[in-house]
Length: 510
Image 1 (cartoon, one colour):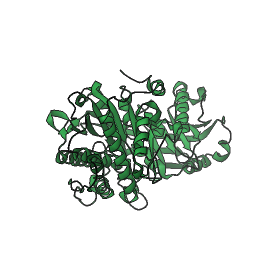
Image 2 (tube, one colour):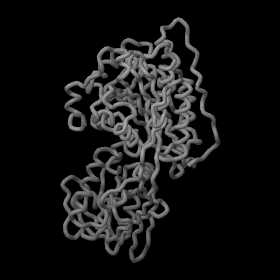
Image 3 (cartoon, helix red, strand yellow):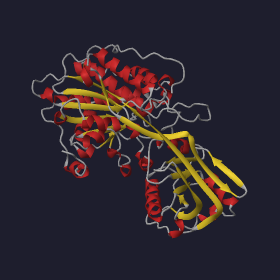
């Protein structure tokens, strides 16, 4: 899942080889209807096998672009072909490629150096600081502490040419961070500051600095912004005879750091590539409704590799984010392919890349769909569905379209799944606008987003298959299958609610 609480910062290959899991479906239990029998092919063991491969070290964290991502795409395409899905990518293949011009930090040429008359301090990227690079590769100036980064912050003429240091409160990267970033940039640019150093809250877990450094490596802002570990900043202030603990108690405190010159080197490199989306379709059986399409989506990419953790692990395997959603989509595709007759509407299965870079793969598909856009009637998105409470899945956007009522009816009709379909548990985070389903919603397509939420392993090397609740994820897969089958068989297509029209009306393109 793209953690857009970090949007303002707007994240190869190692290990031993493993083999993809077999594509043969699980045996069908006897005595079930064809639909029940198809759903029963979605099993915990199959989920484990698929996630274990996609989240293996062999795939190197599935960064966009990377050899591991290409392996993931090839595996998904092979599975779709084995199921008998119709290729729905480019030129009769399962692959759709999209153009990606990537500009990112060169970590070997990125540094933060502070010189004083008595010392030269060099801080470490990903350990001591992260940086959002500005338009210039090098920014330098005397350090000026200017209080707390809050809305309405104003900087005076004394900030011109300076590297302005601001305290940024907040022990987690939540919406307050976005406000602080916005306040800092909004004050620094008109004041003519050279760069901004945000002093991170002392309660912030230092390990998150490395995660943020990965996430923002491909971003650029008008002025370089550094996030500096509190303990490092406090020691730096002490060299200038200042007490940071005391200074940060005054939101408006402004004081220079005598003879302290900060230099931010944020060198960038660029490259062009064409990452893959993988697209397969099951053609509907109704002569009229088969021209209408339900799209399943999940992102197959993750954030690649980074600095080793305490255990020496440098690979971010992304078992939950989002090998879990991708594997669930593959299982649902196999279940539909096992039906003796397809449902009335067509179903398209879309594994996208570039989600972690800003929903780029799904945005490209929505701009250049391989089926007529006006024929897409619904999107079901799966992102991080393998963790947390064993009896609960959250469906974001239930109030926005008739899909919400439908999924509740489906869950009620299938008590054997043992799942509560909860409403949005985090409304303040506006998650409806933060994963690949939004690429469909902004084109007027009703969408619903299944997730089981964040956890302590989010965007860490420890997001491994061993922590996935495979029984739960299999039940979520069956729920998604039953939901899609209900939509595919219904006479009427999904519609927005008034609440949904009000919520997304400003971004709908059609």
